[in-house]
Image (tube, rainbow over all chains, first blue to last red):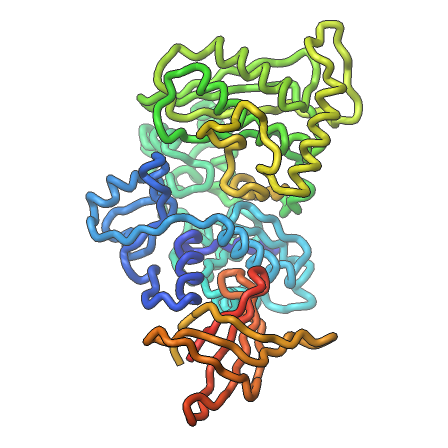
Amino acid sequence: MRTIFHIDANSAYLSWTAAAMLEKGYPIDIREIPSAISGDPLNRHGIILAKSIPAKKYGIATGQSLFEAKQKYPELAVYPPNYDLYMLCSNAMYHILCEYTPLVERYSIDECFLDYTASQNKFGDPLDVAYEIKKRIKEELGFTVNVGVSCNKLLAKMGSELKKPDQIHTLWPGEMGKKMWPLPVGELFMVGRATAQKLQKININTIGDLAKADPNHMKALLKSPGLVVWEFANGIDASEVTLNSEIIQKGVGNSTTISHDVTDRTEAFMILLALTERVAMRLRRLGYMASLVSVSIKTDGFIRYSHQMKLRNCINTTTEIYDSICILFNQCWKGEPIRHLGVHVSDFQVSEARQFSLFDKCDSEKLQALDKVVDKIRAKYGTRSIIRGRFANGNINAIQGGTNDSDFIMMGGYRQ
Amino acid sequence: MKILAEPIEAAVWFKSKEKPHPIKFRYSDREGSVRKVNVDKVISVDEIKTAGIRAFVYRCQSEIDGDMKSYELKYLVSDCRWELYKM
């Protein structure tokens, strides 16, 4: 049997901010008062990114708007996010975990999976080590974590989410009936709001109900994810702890919420170009070319739609991706005010070989050489050291998307 | 001792193989007047990583206004900056 740990920082953004503030002599620990981390409402980034446990008691939840949260508790203490600090905290936590096993998967900025199976001979009882890890992170880094210990990733993750903060939970298969099955079905990993509603309609309310249901029935109801969630409810998960360097990335995308509603096509194009700059840079850094390009739009009425196209050949230059994005945007935009724009590329191929086409509009060899130089300049002198002339003297940020200029670990935990 | 985390100007001896050694520093006290302190003795040096921010904390002692006082200086590695951490 394997031994897997899941380590999850408690209200990560908030406790990291708290630890850094205490270190600077701030008189109160913001973890102990109703507080939250939120983006700037003036830029329309005002949603709650993390909240303290006392704030949770007033019904404040992650993802709520700041306005909503303030209505629930007007004296809520709000702090801005600091993504550079979060990277430092996440890296420091990762480095401690690497001391116990080489098999550490960074699942997201604040979560890691550890395969402890082979380390047991060296470090001993898993539970003792879990306590040691928790204690070390608290003492050395100044924040608390939850550790889930079990025999697979799913149960370890469910275990670490049982009771917070600063707790260790085991969730061995034998303990499922007592610890996991009484929970509401929506608490299960991979069961979102929509799936939970569908299950509740047929009177499946707890994880235990789902576990006892007929797998074929679940497959008929929810299609293939039905089988997956049924297996999860029964604690079945064969997936391995995979090093992030071995995870094959299938797509690259960036998006941004704009500080005002965009109604002008030219301005929308500028923002799409700024996003494409970021996406194309990341794509080239991975060493891939893409053949599927898509654009997504969210309107002022929060209606979201996207449009994609498969290209005849593979591309990785900013200009070529931007040209396709413009075509897509023109095809799908109905003229409504735009709140949010996104650019995404996928269907990768390794960028060494390239099929030329008789219908290439531009000299892609030249564009590739140009992008190579631009990437080099940006790597050496900073991301914004060289920008397109279109952005000169304007107030639109020339490279958009992502929270830090150099690190992308927010989603999927892959660091480029 | 209380956390001050006050940025200071410091004269430091960077040794060839050991950790940097603070010699003297200058800080403004609560009344706003600038004080100069010679570091008489470094008692211990500890590496800390609170909130992932790597730093070295020097426990020091000096004679300030005729009194022997102990305090802590902090060297923030990524910022290359010194702070009067606790006093």
